Length: 38
Image (tube, rainbow, N blue to C red):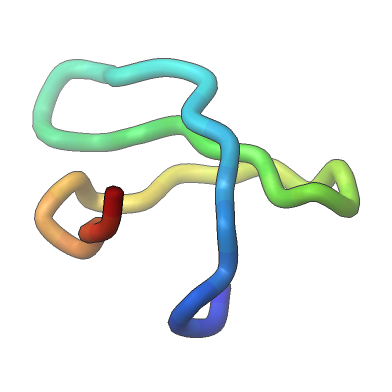
């Protein structure tokens, strides 16, 4: 996803990966170290 895109957190997985979903329904994984915001 591009910078500044909101993603829904679906799951925190072992090894530092986050399973996420975009508003358009697409889902995938990101490294936790790549994510910031609040």
